[in-house]
Image (cartoon, rainbow, N blue to C red; front, side, top):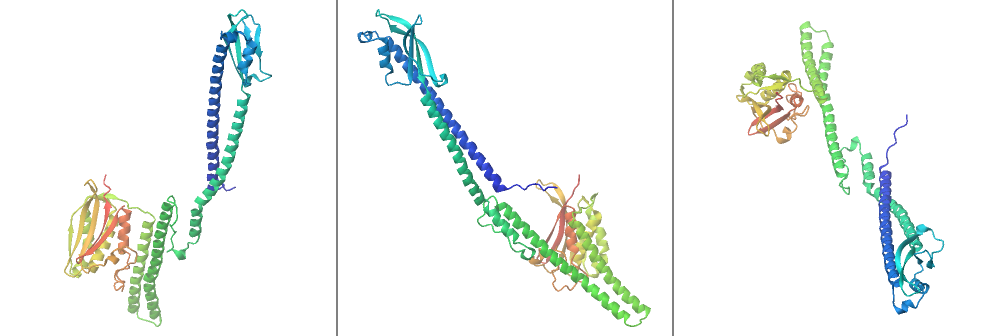
Length: 452
C-alpha cells in the first residue's frame, strides 16, 4: 500500500502566491483594457457627432462664397487633413452627389452614421439629401491590440517575478521551522533541561514553542519522579528483602527448636506483609494513574464514615495520649471504601506526628461555588505538632516522600499514604491541600458532591 503523499508547505504557499499574483495582475490588466477600450469608443462617438454637426453646417451654408463652390470642392476642403473619415452624399432620387468611400476595409473596423442634410442645388436653393459619414477605426484597433499585448506580457512577467520573489520569501519565512527541527533533533532523555530557543521566532510560532517547552517541563518532572520512584521502590523493597534473606540464612545455619523457628517465620511474615502492602499501594496508584474513577453513591453523612474510621484508631489515639474531635457534616456522593481509606491515611499521619496530649480535629465542611451554592465537600485532618517547612509541604503528596529525611519511621510508614489520598481525591474529581502554621498542620482533600 502506497503511503499518502506528505504535503510540502513551502511549495503549496509558493503555488498559492503564484496563482494569486496571476489572478491579481490579470484582473488589473482586464480592468485597464476595458476602461481604455470604453473610453476610446466614447471618444469615437463624440468625434462622429462633431463631424456630423460640422458636415450639416457646411452643406447648408448659403453664403456667396459657398454657392460659388461645387459640392465636391466643398467636401474636399472638409476632409482635408482627416484621412480617417469618408463621405457619400446622394440626392432624394439616389443620384450620387459626392462619394469618397473607404477602400476595402472590414466593416467591423469602421464606424458609420447616415443622416439627412441640405445641399445647395445648381439653382442656388437648398434641397434635401442623404449623407453617410464613415470613420476608419483601424488605427484605434491597432492601438488596442498593442495595449492588450503589453498588458498580457506585463501580467505574465509580473506573475513570474512575483512567484520567484514569493518563493524566496516563503523559504525565508519558514526558516525558523527548520531551526526548531534542528533544536528538537538535539533533544534526548539525557538533556531534559534543554528547551527550544524562542528568540527570533515569529509570533505565530511562539505559542507552539511555549507549549512544547511546557510539555518538556512536564516530561522532565515525570522522568525525575519516575527515577525517584524507582529508587524509592528499590530502597523500600531492598531493606525487608535483605532482612528476610539474612534472617533465613542465620536460621538455616544450624538446627533450631520449633519455637525459635516459629519466631523467625513470624518476623519474616511481618516483613512479607509490609512488602505486600507496598505492592498493593503501588498497584492502587497505578490504577488511579490510568484514569480509574470512583464508583460514587450518595451517603447522608460523611461524619458517620469519619466515626467508623476513628473507632479503628481508638487504641492508637489512647496509646499516644491524644484526643479526637469530629466537627461538621456533609451529604455527598462518594465511594465509601475509598473515603474510608483516605481518612484512615490522614488520621494515621496525624497520630504519628501529633504532640502527646493534643487534640486531632477531623473537619467536614461544604465547599461553595461562585454563586454561593454548595458545590462539594472538604475533609481535613488537623494535628498539633512540629511545623512542616514550606519546601516539604509542596512534596508531601509525592510518592515515597518523607519530610523526615532520616527515615526514622520507615518501618511504620513507607511514604505512599498521602499519595493515595491525592489519588482518591483525583478519582472523585477533586484535589488535596496542606498547610502548616503556628504549630498546627492541616492536610485534607476537596471534591464535588456530585449530588443530583
